[in-house]
Length: 564
Image (spheres, rainbow, N blue to C red):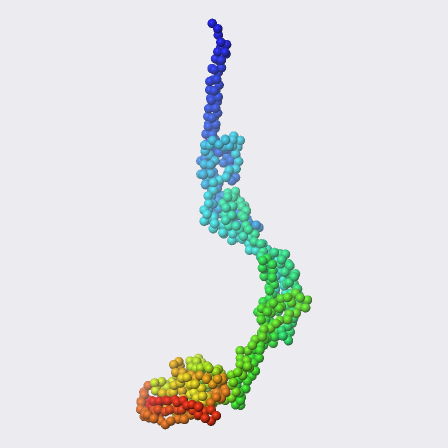
């Protein structure tokens, strides 16, 4: 029987293959088990040489590691930590800043089962520094950072050129420093565990004006500007201004990084006028008055005023010019009332005058004098309506008016301004004989013998007024004069009318009653009859009657009042 040699040779090989695979698998399992066993062993403690922010925890189990870290960082968090920013330094207690270390989480990170090869390698060869798990209270950290900033921030000093009586002075600036609050909080939270000092980030504040620009402005403007006196010419007048006077009015202001010179025109104007008040002159209004019965006028005059803005513009270039002289264009100020204005009013002659007498009564006379002085010199323009109440205002003690008799409800009493009806009556007659429009007036309630019948006017604040309209076509100048016994009101303008007055007979005559009054405020009255009367105003021109105007008045009786 023949035997196949291949069958004989292959049999051992088939048996050897399963044996090799089994051996390989066994080795792999052994290696895995060995790795797992080593990893399990390594997970029971930290690798040798392990440190956390300088704290040695190498070869310790988790509990011991946690205890050592807790103790070390609790002590470190309670100690003041030095921080710096620029050249400044301060201290902060990390615990107060809400900073700490989570010892348990840090220990868990360092000790525990891990299949990472690097962990096994560290256990075999030794580990190095490890990062702690830190904690932070953001609110407390922000407050602590702000407190540090208040101690570490440094205000910058801008360079400047100062102008004073002594001239110009160059002041060198210095950089400022400001702690970057947000970045500083993060840096402090990360690095406090190292024990410090911790350098915090800060931002430098550059001066507003570069040192080179400051020097240029000093050499190009400030120095030459204050090198000597300045001559200022206004019109025909010239004044020499010392450095000590004009230097304080100079300034330099930064604009887009460049210093621009300026002059305080208002301050310089005041300084110039202190040196020579005649550099300016106030405008003078034209005036009109009456002297010895003649109308006289004083001519108006324009004034000259230094405009502060124009002064600054004219002086600025002269400060660095070789001549050191500034010609200032002054501003001409026109008067409010010119000679032409007064001439156009046509006030050239007396058009009416009237005088009324009054008895001795010092308070009453004082009131008459005060009211007359208020009216003296008033000009009523053509077409204007004049109000006596508006001109005098309320009669008060503060204005100087005194208490004197007035008529109220048909009886005499006392009030401030008593007696100015005398002025009102005199004014009314001046209006009457000037031929002007008597817009409104009210006669007294009972007749007063010192006044012309039917041609008189009372006044009381605020409802009883006397008004007239200047319908003459020319201006009216009111002039007054008061003696101890009489008041005169005269009108000056251009005479338009010759006025005549006629008075009719008394009619509707009524007798007074007798009243006995025991009131302590009683004012005695003498009796007079009541009656009606009509007065006619006749307008004449060139000797002929042009028109007439009637004024009807009804007076009530003045009762006989006996006091006591």
